[in-house]
Length: 486
Image (tube, rainbow, N blue to C red; front, side):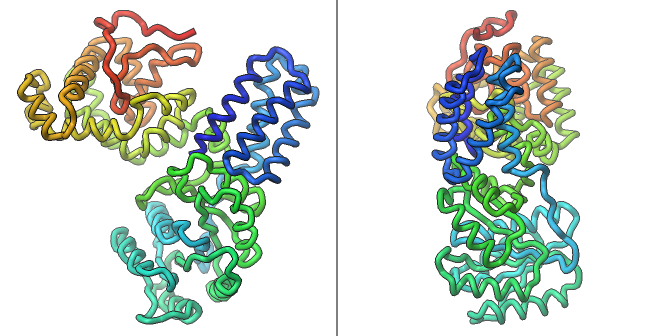
């Protein structure tokens, strides 16, 4: 999510931070780099121009020239202006009667899946969602919504067999809603092509019948430079009240979000960050501004972790750590927990100063899957007693997991190093603190806790934590503090 833009902006701001004094020439050079970063991230040209102009004008003011750290001040100004575009606070859904939400967007934006995700989110809030299938054009769209509704335990209204008129289907759906009584209705409409005026007029007819409290434009994060025209066309046709950006987990640019938010003036309500029905996040503008600037988003990470963590399980694991009884069952539980939090790249991006790790060799979700396959290929006895893993057992595990013996050896070495950490009170304190503060993140929490002063990455053994590959270094008994760079 925004990784391309974040990396480019970090490069531009790194140059500014190193300057003791700022001149108009320095500012111009920096703004040129930032302009290119925004355009390469598919932010609309006009939006980019306005943002650069606002930052430049403030950067040349007295507040920057007189400050002790002018470069840092310009970063702060950019963050402020970015936050203005994204909005001030999270925008809540209008769920007042008649409690109807109309989902609109282009073909392929993910409206049906997003409708189910929104239903899942509302259900978690203690609400009663109802799904209405109005996509009469895409083959299997109605069946897809029925299946998703069944999985969630949410009632789904389907049009009569053979119905091809969305207006008639809408009228039938409104009668169905009356029979259902109370509930928040989510209308999943057919995808539109931006230039298809007939379909857009049809959508307006549906909107006029439904009289929704919310009309949400579901937009693919990879829409690119087309984002402004798409948002403008839908806004002119049905007057959208909010945006839901989908597939942010699969696009490194994400400039469409900035463009659509600025052009429509409508708040971004939610972000789709995965394919599963529970992977819908409330959009927080201030947190997103921090993430784009590489400052992390610990609050969202802790919120996400708190939803997934089992407090009794976490307390039990802490006791096992304290008693130095850590085994491969615990290792496996930590892997499963990290998978629930989402892609490893996304987790690292939420930790301040850790975003750069996502580009390190061996730090990826594939490594997590390989590690999980190896542990699952062990017998229950082997997981509980790793000391019995002799050569023949390791060879059998390699065959069962489809991984080379050298990876099994590396994983065992990682385990042994973790056992040594359990016996080191200083390191154990860092791991425990990270685990409890991060909602049970285990290895990642400890990784953050071990970062030492100066904000630079210590020379830690590769492969110490799940998902971080590479052959472990020899650090003896961990008697010395990891050496800090710089």
